[in-house]
Length: 204
Image (cartoon, rainbow, N blue to C red; front, side, top):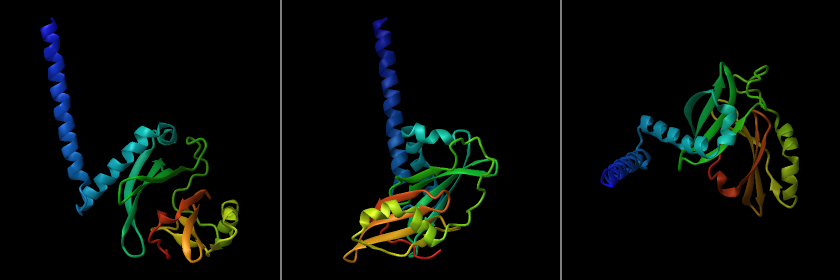
């Protein structure tokens, strides 16, 4: 009996070990930098969303049951890939989004549009009309107040296929020290470190 148990454990260990080796090889092939095929890039982006689903179940919960669309690759003004955007839909309604870095597959940002994701009474189906630059500055006033001694540049729209963010650059002595973004989707304000956008797009 003990002998059979040992055989079963050994066989299971070998199978699991072989599966892990194959998974590592496949993952290495998929994520290998330099693959330029669109299919491989999209597959890498889809793998990038997996940690968000597994590690952040509380944040992912509003998206359960929604249809996942994408990814769409966004570039900066110089043509450098910056991030992949996924959209979550219920019917024709966009209920949220997830952005995955095109450089390292890290989760950049996410958001949803309703406290109750089943309430679709006024859902956005496309990019909405963005707030004005003045409205964006007003929404970001509390965050910008922490940079009273710095220079705050005029906001500019950032995005592709539609204006997604008002991007506000904060500088001190000519050096960028922070970015503040205001979402055109839901007005959410994000404060980001200086290195977040190395080459921000200045035009949409």
